[in-house]
Image 1: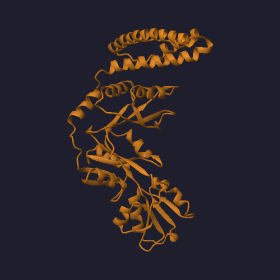
Image 2: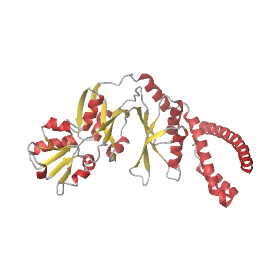
Image 3: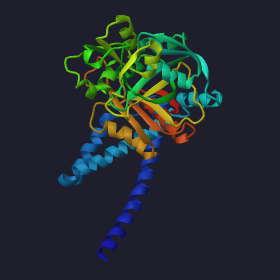
Image 4: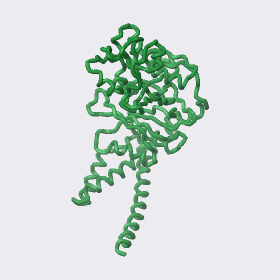
Length: 379
């Protein structure tokens, strides 16, 4: 009976807490309206520090730290509520709604697509999956693909974004900050690497191997069994295959694809040399204009957080509060700023959800580094 009475008392206290919480948030709303009219920032760090000092002193030594955690959460909820008021319908929300209303219901089968590398590159194979009637244009670098889309030379671009064995393609992530684009679709492809050489070449004669650095990493276990063989990094796996043909030497091989074996007339010295059969690369299709096709269930954004304890937790808590599943969270250093990071987030959700639009509007208003990268689905 004693624990029952204790729980009854807690229930009574909880009833008081929720009444006071509602009252506090209503006053917070009034303050937010005032800030909106006066065009003043939502965050007032001096005021928050003053409250935390007072709360800690009132709570005593044993509960001081706990009370600060509680009130930091209250501050975050109040700021979030005020940010929502400042965001209103939001420019971003209107742009997303416009894309939802005006995007064609069927993903296109043709178009000019920019890919890095040459004929036979994995990016081209990914482009063929999405656009069976595409006109593919090749560029020497990932930066060239972004620029081709940004300058309207190509309507679409195809870029590798991450691999299941070796993670993010960091160069692509870093380029994301500097170009205007939207992700329209994602393609997940199983990658089976093959060691290729000239017809008649024997594995024991190989002295040099060419490939992209990601492919070399993905085949690390196989390469350990080839001591003394020189590894050369090149633009991509298709370029590596072409180098073998151009060199005309039975001592040179390439880590590439079976498609390139057929394309360049090369001999398979060894198949399936990747570290694991579970080797997948995800490619993104980008475009200059926002478009959200039916079935889009994945959203990507970029956002920064302040360099202080709990800032990342408070960001993630916004998604947890809506029951949103984060698919990816990756940090990249901000160039020219010591120990400041930009975060890339992929999460599962629909842009038809008013709560998600409200969250995106809130983030866009409260975070100067926020970028909406797109809503799309993966095939």
